[in-house]
Image 1 (tube, one colour):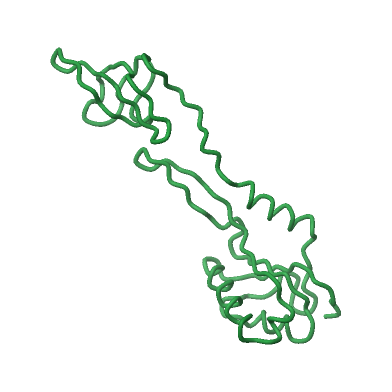
Image 2 (cartoon, helix red, strand yellow; image 1 turned 180 degrees about the vertical axis):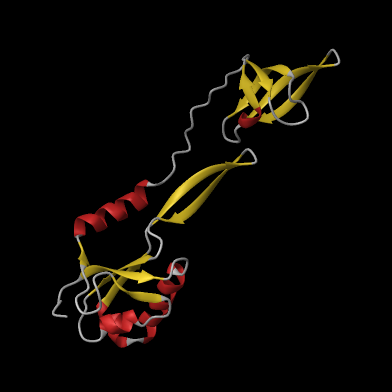
Length: 180
């Protein structure tokens, strides 16, 4: 372990326990002099995913590399050994004797993708006022109506549907209608 400069290393962790490993190491940094001197950052690469659930947009943050925790450190003395024996850590990528540092270009790409993964709220709205749509979901499926209002923030439409000869306003999500 002749590494003397600051590098990024990959710790293999039990899948699903990455946050616990990060939390443990950050707590140890406050108490353990060796770690606080040679460990600089702990990072779990994440990315945001948007899905539609019940007509609502749900944004979840998922771990981009399950089972891996990135650590910026100098592996002097027993630093590597101390990190290796953190609970839920399986070892370093490259082995304990000579852990392989990650290229700075790869780290920059991961940090860049973590920042760029912000989801753009702009979604192409396929509906405009006065379009004729058919209701495909819910208690009024099969009815046809005209769009009166489009709410892009909530992904909802106000549709006027003729029921028993009377015009009735319905509030429907984009997923509940199709264009005719």
